[in-house]
Image 1 (tube, helix red, strand yellow):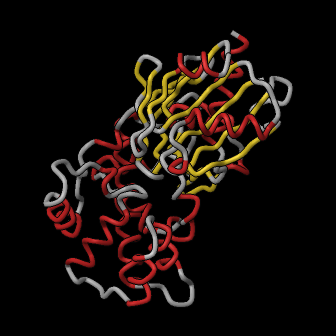
Image 2 (cartoon, one colour):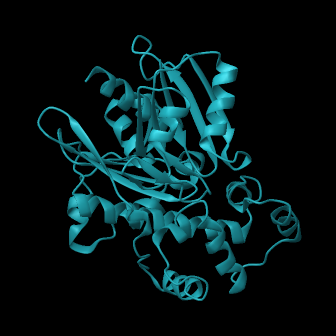
Length: 330
């Protein structure tokens, strides 16, 4: 039995898998709010007690850099050590992967039912694949082909500099530099970044904050879902929220195009994370495509690259399971 997990700043999803059932069919699965637990150990203990299954190995995709089998969750006060987990739960092996590597492992196994196409492009067999995932933070990774299989590589590209592409975004950068010493792309292109864009529009008085919205925001610790829902309201979208999400989408499109050029992802660009699949109606329009393609002379290359949103929200868990089961065979 393999214990696999998608360990994020907002939620932790765990599953038990076997070689017979494969990475798509967990024998048990559950999701937990990460912030309500002091550690990953505590989540695992509760999950295994409820599942009633014994596991022999584990594979976790974690939202943070992994160095020497040790990880610290970027947006959560958890530290994870593979050796400690191996000892505590009597496991023969524990794999720690960056969550973007975990997600990337699953990408070659996705089918049409797991995807929504934004730009058809022309898929090049064996071409490099890029993955960008705005969730609580902003993750970026890529895969390269060795002639037989794809190999995933993680990065911390989401923490590279935010590069404004128009006058509005320049003003946004200037606004955020008063708050942060370093304005990374994650500060504006993630679940934690959307409230920053909202604060910019509110501060600049570009649109009025309705009293009903102010009340809702005051009652929540996570403003992003409130802002997104108000922006996407089909009957009466909120103007300041619409401006916020339009700006977010433009920045996401531009950064996806940047990543595509950096790794020359002729095998496609995939949008993962918790946000893209939830805002598809707003994402599947000319705003994203224009920002993605807006690279001057390089537009001719980007027009050929397919771009898809991953709609299967369990992709990081699936990837962790694939990785663990494959290593078990080795």
